[in-house]
Image 1: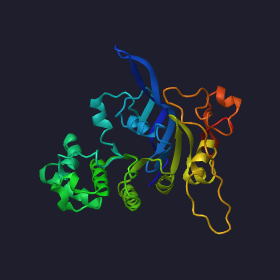
Image 2: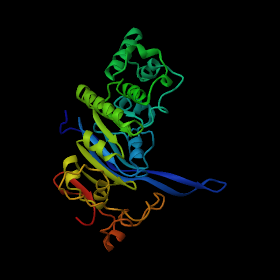
Image 3: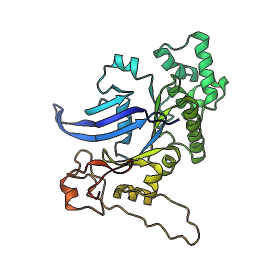
Length: 326
């Protein structure tokens, strides 16, 4: 159940990857994958993060759980600054409480290990349960994600993509975490299987009081599962609002263009929704435009957009946008 207590706060978080060149591999520049995002997540809510491929949404998720070291800014989890905690401290205080479900259910599971070994691994690392109790816990988790407990000694190659993703989810909740980051968790699955996995995630959220960050490029899926939605473009957060406000009244020109591309069934007599086609190519994150990073493709760009970076500010109640139009 969602409440007003903050579980995660991002303050100007950045992740820049160095570009090496020459024989001496000197740093010639940086890919600004995440370039100063601010976000607050409440306990028990599901926040969706959307955007085009290459916008930095997956990098943001991996930086939050410290698979990538942040270049700048602060990551506060449950009030604690985890931005630069050493691995020993991370394991004690954070690793158990933030887990991740990865995009590719074929690559994220070790093919040489049985389901039992895969799901027991986080329990081994954190010394949870013992002997028979640990095996019983694995069987219980398999049942919770819709798999037969008798599968415990089988290998990942014996399962379909949807079943493998269920295994990944079982591994993610094995430590009873507070938060799960789902990085494109259903994008590799058939549509019918996507619906089953989404329903499973919602059921587990209710049962374990989980907080989700759901990263996806599929706007329809994000609308279904999320409480609030953030829209990213070229490493920056463009807009953030509750899903009803964002989908019914998008403020940023980029969000408007994204939503105009979503197919919507049209009833008889209804006017056809205008499609907004963005011109030009997505700029390189290694050399982002000056001012607003979206101004090179924005149909409403002004001279101010080319000169100054817009502030990410609240323009309506709980509706944030980074745009000079507001």
